[in-house]
Structures are given as C-alpha cells and as structure tokens.
Image (cartoon, rainbow, N blue to C red; front, side):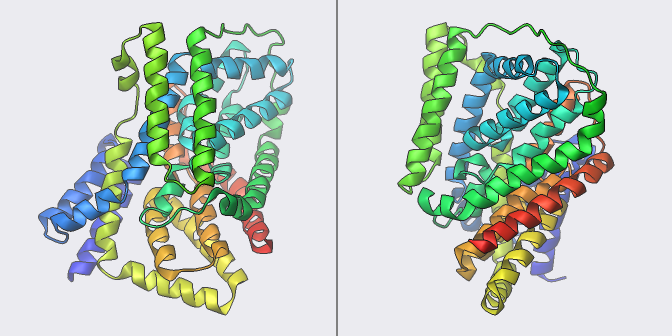
Length: 418
C-alpha cells in the first residue's frame, strides 16, 4: 500500500469519525487522532503540521470571537427575549410564528454565523414554543437547522466554512462578494422557506399557540450584549469592504464586548468561558492538518486540473457540476473537510468567481440534505438532545431532499446568470 493510499485512508476514516462519532466521542477527538496518526506514521512532518495549523489562525480567531459573543448573548437572555417577542407577535397563528422565527434566523445567521443560529437560537425558540404552549415545536426548530445553512453565504462572516474555503488564499472584498452572492443568497433563502413551509404545512395547520405570551425582561446587560453584537457586525462589514482578514476584528470585538458587559455586571468570566464549545478549535485545526497531508499526495492538484478543464469547456456546466458535486460530498464527509479540499482545489485552479462561488454555495447550502452535513447541523442536533428532543437521520433526510435540492439548483442557476 503506497503512502498516498494510506494518507487518503486515514483522511477518509477521520472524516467518518467526525461525522458518525463512534463511542460518542466528540468530533474533535477524531480530527486530532487522524492528524496524530499521520505524524506517527511519518506521512507528514512537523513543518507540514505547522503549515496546516497556521493556515487556520484567522478561522480560529473568528470562531473564538463569535463564540464569546454568542455565549454572552445567551447567558444574558438576549435570544430568549427575541424569540419571545416573535412569539407574541404571532398572535396565536402558527404560520405567522413560523415566518417570524425564519426572519429571526436569517438575521442571526447573516450577522452572527450559522453556528450561533444552531447553538443559541435553537434553545431560545424551544423555550418560546414551550411558553406559548405549542403542541409540536419541531417545525419551528427545523427552521433553525435549515436557515443556518441557507443564509450562510450572504456575508463572509455568516459561516466559518467561508473562511475555511479561502484559507491560505485571498478573501474576496465585500463589494465583489455581494456582487457574486447577493442574488443566489436571496434565492436560497426564499426557496428554502417555500420548500420547508410546504413540508411542514400539515403540522402548522393542526397546531395551536397561545395568544398572550409573557415576555421576559430585557436586562441592562442584555442590551449591552445586543449593542456589542450590532457594533461587531458593523466592524466586520467594514473589514470585509476593505478586504481585511476577519479573524482579528471578530476576536477583539468579542473579547472587548465580553469584558465590558461582565465588568459592568460584576459577573465571573469563567462562567462565560466554560459555556463555549472550545472543542471546535482542535476540530478545525486537525482537519487543516489532514488537508495539508492530502495536498502533498497530489490529490488537490488533480482536482484543480479537472476543475480548470471543466471551466475551460463550459463555465455554465462547471458551475452546476462543481456546486452539485461539492454539495453531495459535503454530506458524506461533512462540509468542513469538503470545504478545505474544495478551497485548495479552487485556489490552485484559478477559476472564475462564478465557479469558485458555486463551490462555496455547495459547501454552505448542500449540508441541508443530512444531519451530518455541517457543523451547524450537528450542533443543532446536540441542542435538541439537551432539550430531550430527537430528530432521526432518515426523517431529516426526507425533508432535506425536498428542501435542499430545489434551493441549491435555483441558487446555482442565479449564480450562472450573473
């Protein structure tokens, strides 16, 4: 067995471990074990390990900053208040509540990332549904899962996978990003809503919710956390417009907001720090090392050649083929490693923006097919389990097939038209 074949096998088993979580071990353990096995078998050296890890520094800083902001907002009850406001404005209509939760999910995903929607908004929506005596909360919770991916390419900050794809390369400036992704994002959000609503129409028609819902008090610290989120979003939009890396601004904004709020409220910072999912950092770092090892086998070069050849033959066909294939692969191996491989191939192939955009849409929107497609959906499942709820993989797949493919195909068609 050649060294390349062994490296590919370890990479495949690592992706399988991340997706399936054998022995219920966290995803990060499998990513780190895969990277450690590559080092132990001398398939990758210390220099390559460091090169892989260092490519993710901007992503790590971005994730830490966003997790600090999200956990702060959760602890201060900001999202519970937003969800309760949406429930009270539903005025007893399940369909109106469905729409309102979807709108809130869009805003949270666009400006706070899809992981925040999965981790923070999901329990807030469940708490609001329980307060409103909703018979079946699942349609509203499914909104959190699907919009987390459907709206995750509106801005570069909407999904950590966006930073992963361009790791080691140059993130497009905000003007070029919006020119490429604004129309496909609008199509993705609208079509996902229409298809998801259609799958849940019967449950919504049979549901009842209370008209009068008690609204939680919005504390001073929650207001400060909210303003911190707004200021952070404005800073990141400005950084994108000036083509700056997003990691440092996000980290600094998250850290300063957390320090200010906790100092004014005299809270113990350890409580906020403990609530953060720190395992995400070694998970991403381990995957970066895996991709660096696979890059040395020549697989990425082969993929980039095929992509460049397809782009030269027909740009429209390349958009469709690249987007659909990456979307399917993202559900087989999770979109983080898929995004890392695809991003490396795109950077090496030097393809037009439309084809690079198709790859990104496939990585971001494609995971709506399955429960293991993206980190955000995995985190959403974990949030459901904490509330004693369950969503089977097959049940999600049935809904995902009806929702994801129309949204993906039409979003790629919109991209091809630009």
